[in-house]
View 1: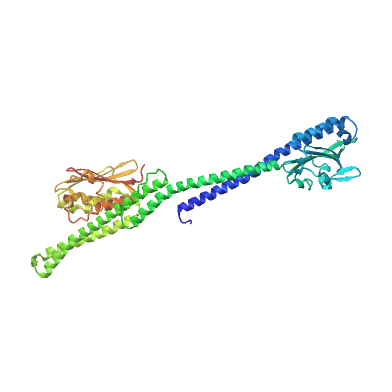
View 2: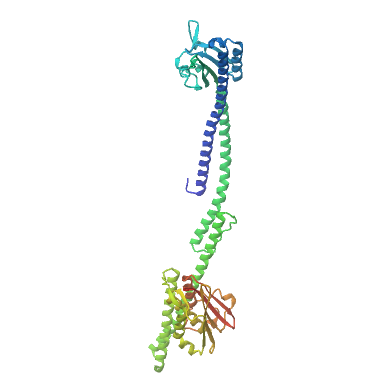
Length: 506
């Protein structure tokens, strides 16, 4: 059931929605009841305090006990008025639990046909009406509490009504001649609160209905939202299966601007890169096959000619020398390919040292002096500074300079000129190797760093080359985290420039 993103998203969204609404509903139910009952408790408490204040004023101004105060018409009328205004039952009880005065706004609920109070639950003794249990008035009569609040059926007195009652109790006190506070009775105010609870239940029922409607709408919306997300993901998964079978031309048409659209664009870029890599791999295999097949065919022909006697004896050494050169060329190409593979796999470990770049270039030029003399080339060397120290791997940079010089020799005509110079800008050292050969077309400049890439036949006239020199140069400079580039004009020559980090810069 939960194997697909769609099912997971839908299930999680529904679970979160149900949980959120459930928590909200419980809090609403709790706080609604608490708020409304709290308002009612505040009203009854205020009523009890007002009534108690009236009794206290009477006791202070007129002699007599609480019974005398309750016989006053003003207090008696206030008692009835308070009962009517709050819809409550009010008792005035003395310290022994005797009901002295009462006011009943209602004694019967005609809607449910039930009494609000059963008078036969009182105890009648010697003409007195007493509360049936001492625990009903024991707490408030201690005088330790100004207000006592109770909810329920008040110890069974209102059990027959089937409703919940709120009772507010407050002690009636006076001060004797010694100034001591004496409790002589208490005020009890009772009010039924089922209508409040029923209202709360009604609100909660509407809330449940709203939750169900919202849940249905949410499920519909999440269905479409999840579909919009999972549909392109399914497209990407399908395209990935096609690519896994080797069809790298697969593309996904998703135009959304969100993360899924970005994933689709990245997937298309990946597919394009894989296609490029596949084309490069095929081209590489074809180039290697071609580069190996040509010398191997030549070697086979010469060897067979020598073995079957078709080669004159005075030519054998010449042909064997050619075979030796071809084998050397193949060996160099294999070694170059292995070196490139190590560079691309990150297995080449450079050892950075302080290197005098000018001295390194001098050694490279001296080592290739025979090549320059064979083509009668003039080499112009120009150093901006006598000593130019850089941070580099000396073996790697020596190979870079040698490859660039070999490349310049290869494409510079007889009697031409090669210019080598170094110069600085801020903390960078620049090396330039320039020839006045055939040049490179602008559209080919970005491609010359590829393995075995050849711009035209004239640039591949030197059969001793491996076609990997510039690819190695590019990889070595990348390993140094430096730049290398070419500037060229057809018929005027080519200039290669690379950078290195200077050291001991003042």
